[in-house]
Amino acid sequence: MKLFNTLTRKKEEFHEIKPGTVTIYACGPTVYDYFHIGNARPFITFDVLRRYFEFCGKKVRFVQNFTDIDDKMIKRANADGITVKELGDRFIEEYYKDAGALGVGRATVHPRATECINDIIKLVQTLVDKGMAYEADGDVFYRTAKFPEYGKLSHYPIEQLESGARIEINDKKEDPLDFVIWKAAKPGEPSWDSPWGRGRPGWHIECSAMANKYLGKTIDIHCGGVDLIFPHHENEIAQSEAANGCEFAHYWLHNGHINVDSKKMSKSLGNFFTVREAAKVYGYETIRFFMLSSHYRSPINYSADVLSAAKAGLERLYTAKNNLEFEIKNAKTQKMDENEQAALAEYDIFKTKFCEKMDDDLNTADAVSVLFDFARKMNSESGRSAQFNTELLNKFNQLCGVLNILTNDMPAEIPADVQALVDQRTLARKNRDFAKADQIRDQLSKMGVILEDTKDGVKILIKK
Image 1 (cartoon, helix red, strand yellow):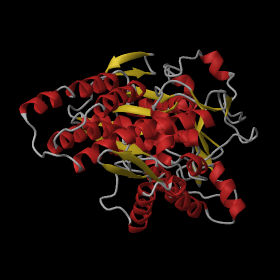
Image 2: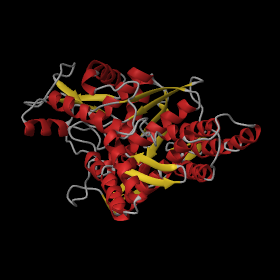
Image 3: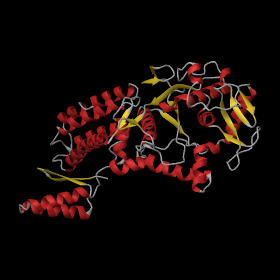
């Protein structure tokens, strides 16, 4: 497998540190609100990365943190009249609801920054002891000038970094590029005892400490959105490598931006959507499929037309799957013969092609195209044995499972109210009352039930 490494700016053959086990750290959300569609992209992308490694037989230790203490959280908690912890508890649970609905599996560990304060303080102290950090009036800053490789991830010259708009201006700093790793307590803010007085951690130090605690000093893959390359990931490298004296991560993966109607998403433009809001219109699975239908490093455009196209594409795959399930149920024969065994073997090419695409820097867009090719060939089959169709369905589901799509199966039993309407429609068609038959079809469609008339009877698809 080859992955594009932001650190080297090229695709590299992936080799894990410990054969058979992959360690991945993914930057998680700051839990002060529902997460938006831009946040959803890395959650989905790196969930698939994990699933593909597991599909290839590797064990994955996947860590995704929750930032549950920062300025945004303090501001929101004060506005809501609750504690920062109460706010964090609430939106971590809301994250799990939305992420789960998107098909994003839970990490091996979901550490919270506030649960790792001792580890953070220990790391800050190590940097101070090594002369890589200094205290000023209760704040502790990292000395970037003492880390010669600063800027190696973002590939920006130091002069350009110094003029960057995201660098916080502070008279306490020895150098404009220095950044805070421990903040002195302010009245009314959560704080913890430390060698430098009461305070709280800076944002960048949290991830360094949590990655070190749960994955070790050097990890295989660190990932997140492209917006985190500088300063967040750049600062993580500086802190971790200065403290531990070794490489922090071998591979750095970053997903591209999401625009809304070809414009950058922002609340001021009124084009800011949470995943929960978007899911009410398009459904969670459509959002996941939309994300995976483009290469993760490419910027993508979120619009009504694009989401509608994604929904239609997903439904085409569902139709192929449900057609096969219908064929299994209505098969005239049960066992495969030799001719069918040979025909089934022809489908192995799709797994080979699927893996080729995924091995090429997690190219889910081309992997989805392979699924459509699979579905087209699958749709051309009819009159096969139940065994043939069952094994074919297993092959198709296996590949869909890597992307974690097409998870809404047809129910084993049709609900009584649905079956009653289907029977009424069948009778109406028999009596040539086509107006009534169409009325019942429309009624069922509003209930999420799709009907297809075939020579073997009515095929019923219930959409969840």
